[in-house]
Length: 188
Image 1 (cartoon, one colour):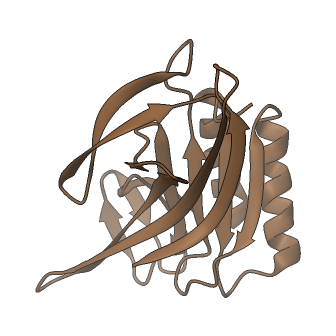
Image 2 (cartoon, one colour):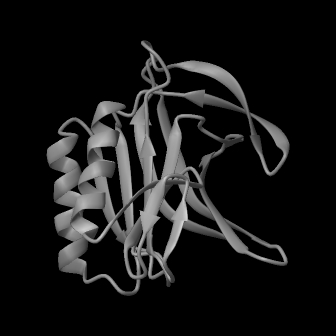
């Protein structure tokens, strides 16, 4: 499943206008014991080729349905869980604490574009406060707060990072198992 979440225009380093459409992707996989969802971001250039940026990280915040011990984390039923790139990033009784940890991680990695999609159980006012937290931690980043309306996940967060010193260059990535070429451009 895909949801179009944003369109951005920018000039590349050659001064040419570029327009990109961002899509939140949701792949679902069911096994005998688990039902998994994998979130990602697909980027398509208008009048151009489909692109995938390797410098995009996704995170989700949900809750624990039961007590458990996983990957060194002592998880209590009702705790908030932060997942990053499909792995447990942290757990806490405070949603605010996990948002602060994710914002600090985004700042440490020099995020340049951050999108927060808040779920059906989050008030818009609370989501705007979460966005302000990321803006404060990452003052050079563009931060968007959007209603995703998703169940189960309080937030799905997409964080885009620069590719390298010049932030422009071709690369090869995969989208649904197919190779795609991409160009990372300056979004400033």
